[in-house]
Image (tube, rainbow, N blue to C red):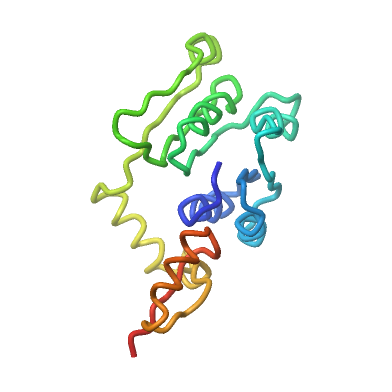
Length: 175
């Protein structure tokens, strides 16, 4: 859930592991990047679509996914992510919500479906090293995440594009 830069990194990693990847996002441009990175199905969500039901429709018998990954930091998406896994599946909550944020989870869903919920904090030395190694070893092509190279004089424009959720990442040319 979420096709921003981190969500797209999850797409690439899951595809490399051979997963059938389903991506949800509000932004059609980001979904097209997800498709280019190997997602098999993309779902553009809005307030009228039940994201969980749409994802479950794609799985065998509407059972849910093996692993659902949240990469937005939006509390509602955290709640939906916990509802997506099949019995015995896992919900990975990666996107950090604001401090003090609470979410509502149906405890019987977790208990009877034996859902594993895993929080992941990405700034630990282990994950930083793993990320660098994936790029340094050529497993992940970092250049595929660069939407455009922008001269330093247009730095503000690059930040405005990021704020509008256009593109993925921008390389700033200081020469």
